[in-house]
Length: 507
Image (cartoon, rainbow, N blue to C red; front, side, top):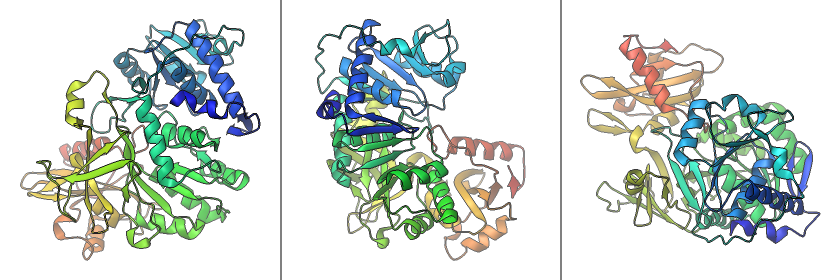
């Protein structure tokens, strides 16, 4: 299925597929380059089932490498572009990679590797081959290779925010289904112009933007990374219609647009996921752009399973309803469906669900049961069937037997005029097990005390949910996918706890 996407448009020599740094690539060019790369990979010994690790920033080579690999029935293993040597080696060893393709910027992290390596570089290096060898047009065509729907197409590693990264396996069918579900949900068509700032080594960028856009014949404006200045200029120049981003990037975009008063009226769909999107930011974005935020929920194991499409401020803050092709149930710990407004775990049934974790049967059994993905996401459903995210099972704060959602407290704290960012975690307490701890970044280094926080929350939160500990950070740590790294934040709080440092501490 995946290797037929470009074939649909291969004869169109005028239709633009990708624009990167002012360079235009047509659909026929992308198809042709992908075929050439596939031929050369085959000559290098790549066969059906071979694992090819891809370690690079956003660039066109990554797009046509995906399709070259799919043509051969090989397996794409995109690696997080933020990884360093140890993390890179861990993934390469876990997936037993047959080849690594990288770029000059990442060469410094290639240590103690004993596999075939190609690097996109202008310089020669005796330790690996130059990527230009894979662009040899004179290489004989590879033989026809039967690629079935259920063949493994990609292994995508999770961010590892709560555990060691796991290799999420997707077949050609599940990847295609994920793209199709999104296309149907947001009514994507060939007029779509996608601005891609998300890393396309992750499923949101890879499936939610690259493959879905190419599948409908749309146009991709590809960025090396997120930058609000470059993005706003491109939106105005290319009339970008579709965006996807994480909340922290949305905040940066809103702040920049608020200062520049740019014209972003071409935007039709701005999807934001990966973490809770503050309602105040959504309202400000709507005021500035006249475009609603489309809040989404998803995971590498089941991409964008829930989408809030209804342009109704009464549902602002909801993650929406099940995406096209997706069935969602909210269940208790006994796997029984809960009533409306009762909190339970989201489980997902979809053709887009992963087929398992690479060489990790134990975790596969825990997460994938009878075709259902047990997400670990806690939520409740209202009377209109809209779903409201509460938090992750592993993130819940348990204070004296009462469950507290960090996101609920964060939604209140972010409204404080002195707070720029916030992360709420559980802090050890001898009597209550845990108490609520607020870790915040301040606006303009203004002063803020724990008592200020308590006064602010007095009429907004129950007493037991109100923070009893405050740490002020210069910057909140984030993991490799841009989400708040709660493990690091908790570790910092515990370190300070063990050092017997008092409240209101500057971190």
